[in-house]
Length: 127
Image 1 (cartoon, rainbow, N blue to C red):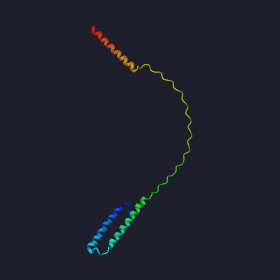
Image 2 (cartoon, helix red, strand yellow):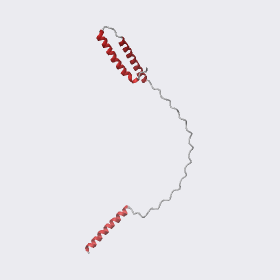
Image 3 (cartoon, one colour):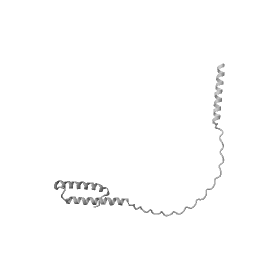
């Protein structure tokens, strides 16, 4: 059964905990002079295999990845040039509207009206 890449570190940690527990059980029950039990040897072999698999995957990850080959697009045929546009005749200038007074004319007319209103008030006040 294949092992997931992301789970190798956790499997190594779990294996280490089981190995440590097996070693402690052996030491407490039989002492340090006894050779490693069958469980310990199996756990050590499994741990070595897991570490080798992790190192192999890390080395493989450092290798350059194969990039997909991009397909070349077919060249489109060139478009036919468009016919040049015909120059339009210049338009006749519009006639200026003389009806609308300019701002200066408005202000001067307003000032004249105010002056006329003052003079009219002065005359009516004297009479």
